[in-house]
Length: 200
Length: 186
Image (tube, rainbow over the protein chains, first blue to last red):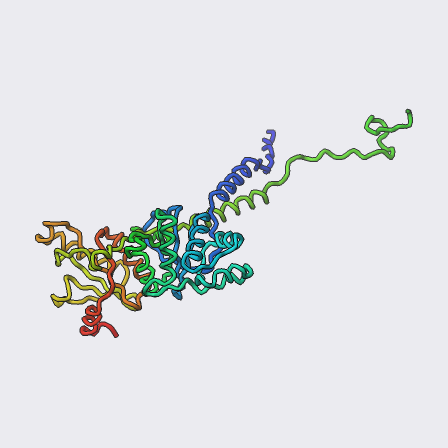
């Protein structure tokens, strides 16, 4: 009987289609990802079961675990408007257009108002050292910022992004700034990360 | 003309003309490329989903109404939670004038959630309270040494147990005195 010959097939598969798909996905994820801006502080936000995504037009008050307060606004033009209002209006400090531009490019800031011009002249790596916006039980400078930010854009949502280990009095000072009749921001958001294990 | 050798015109195989290049396959090994592509896919996939923040809406009572929490018509519906040090929660029903019993609990499914669900159940069975709305009113009073995380966690528990009426109020000196008199604060 003649032997049946099994034809030997090549193990080489055409991967072109796979590569096409792979890079299509890479492109999609690259474009869809919004990279985190370079923040002056890292905060570990607590998790919750709330899943409402954060809107685009938002003012974020960041609190680190030592209670330092930072302010961020995502609209660059409004940020320029805000810094001019606060610095020129009440404090008589004027900034050069370059300084205003540089300020608007910062993701968030935590510097006392009188130190802002000097801070903007620092080298980029020195700018990361910030002591937070002065904020006490009466509001301090944070009140001025929020009050003016509400004037610049009254529709922007205000969100508090605080470290889980931040002490409550620091948060309370901020809530006091938000929830009074002058700033009129009784509704605000707390930023949390989504925790699925507790959804049950 | 005759000495111009174009070599391609056949014939002299062993002459010093150009060696004909071997026809190479146009197929290249794409395995490393695929590896890299999928590595990037994995990276972007994980990076995107992990850094997705969620917003927890909070509404504070309007201070124009002399700073007191909304009218607490039915005292029997009120549950006060006092957030203390080291993730402790003290809770009591009704108000301090009634000399309530203070319970101590902590976060988690078996602790605070149970307290909240019990309160909810109690209200549903309460005839007087059912005349109005059936959900309890929760007052959250964070003490000075509580952490922000405690506040978020307790709000989160309200979301899980589907409690809609809660309000954050500053902790009273009376509350602290009362807890002290019960020997709960050390």
